[in-house]
Length: 318
Image (cartoon, rainbow, N blue to C red; front, side, top):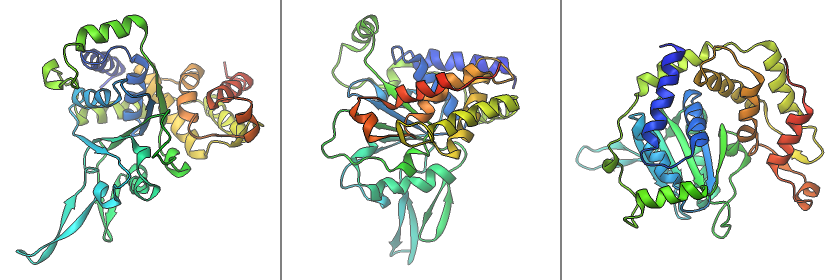
């Protein structure tokens, strides 16, 4: 597989997803970058902005197995990863796999379940395996978590712990569509109040897990110069020294940004990373990894604003 084919798959993926989803070009790109990096994505947006439908369509366009967990306050860890149940006929314990045994896992409204259940995803997201009764089960290199959460509803929700947030490559903010996009949505889907069925749109897969593996091999060969490495490290370290931030980004963030920058370069048809690749990805890669200082919160600053200041103040290589 060469870079030209990587670009063709990107264009084909967007074409198939946009049979169902109106707009969201940048979101689709970030999701594909994450898939190429074996990363995970947290999507935050108000209800009704097609977050769930987008994830389903993305999985269908790549012919990946899709699983969904609707997170609720009474969900238990075993409901996520599975458990061993005793079979009286065979007189032995048998593994009943949970929905985590899939390729694209939609963790819908992930912040509606208590931290005990949220933590069931920690090992899966980091190591792509789960441990049940001292036995470790592999989830495969196609495993990817795409979680959603609602930013405006706080009642009955539990903030995601920092350890889990740091495992997400990107936090993507999905806003309202433009006027013309909303008109197109109503023209396309306004005949029914039910969620559209993917089967009605004849989604043609543009690749498979094997295709993704080939693209990942191409991404791994993208050149990352020492100057770009220094730039990424400088950005991450600056988050730990900025007066508006109480907690900065971790070394894991720098590694993930480097990998994502390679994937972004490959999707643009380049075999080398440029500073603009990093600048494009820095906000979705860091906004969930930093914690505002109390004074900055009182002043009404946002994580995106502080990250933008850091980018402006950090010298980029030429």
